[in-house]
Amino acid sequence: MFYEPLKKNHGLSKNPFNSLVVPRPIGWISSIDKEGIVNLAPYSFFNAVCYRPPTVMFASGPGSGSDGMKDSISNIESTGEFVCNLATWETREQMNQTSASVSSGTDEMELTGLTPLKSNLVKVPRVAETPVNLECRYLKSIRVPSWEEKDRYFIVLGEVIGIHIRDEYITEDGLVDIGKINPIGRMGYNDYTSVNSSTIFTMERPD
Image 1 (spheres, rainbow, N blue to C red):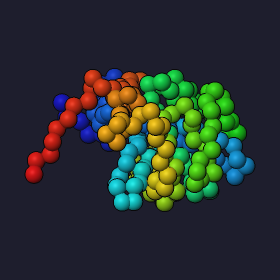
Image 2: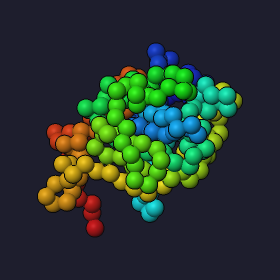
Image 3: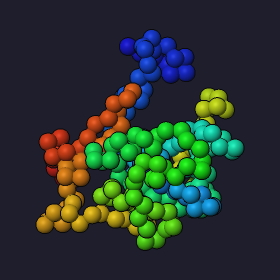
């Protein structure tokens, strides 16, 4: 089949695009507003973009705030900080709960029974239940050109200035045991996947 996204002429029951670029890591982003209220939300348009400096990005669609933004972006642009918490198989239910639309004054960590931990370099708390946390300094937001005003998307870039890895997930060889961590990723529709020891394979790069 062939279709043009602008024309929406795929003829399928649901738009297949989100099911084609998969799996996508989940950026479980914690931020705070000026009053210190914590926001925690998952973003499946997320990834690392470079090594030096280590930088991550996530993309957010329109929100219900007075500025048309989601709370995460409003908070991050206001405070200049955020934390990316690794979503894992163990935290999948809480991650899903934090995707609910709630009022801007709601603390999603408290709502989902998660434990806030003090970060080292930023004021934003990290999620204690996740084995990896990336403390980030906000760099910039980039608006993605859109077909219509209601489809506004923004890419948020952050420099990773501090990294927490729980010691039990580091091997004797000094490697991160990602299979043991068991992170989850977003597929299309309501589907997810996980990375574990049985789904990992190794290939050496050619010279």
